[in-house]
Image (tube, rainbow, N blue to C red; front, side):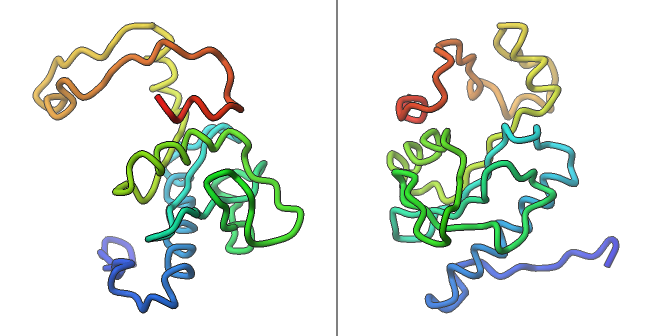
Length: 161
């Protein structure tokens, strides 16, 4: 299938009873695409997808890299990080950053948080992004330097900013 574009049906086109499974498949696909693009940063990256019309989301089991995720490692959890599916499932305890965004923005259906090497290097400068080329124009006035990190990743506050 090299070079071919494969249309994936939107979750809105899927029977409501099959939406969770469709979302699980889409999320699995996304994990592997992000991995193939070299974007995950070990265990520090997160990828979640909100279940439409609910206060739950799908997430993978903690301590597995994106390229290692299989369907049985994707579970449903409440916004307070209580896992609904599976027993003794450990999810990333820092996911409040996702859930607070989902709570504040009902229109957001998926969140990807990575620490790509080039972005990490840029953020280490402590400077904001300056648009220098035409290609960067789409970022004009859209990027900000978040320099208020107190190092507390386990609290509920990071996603509330």
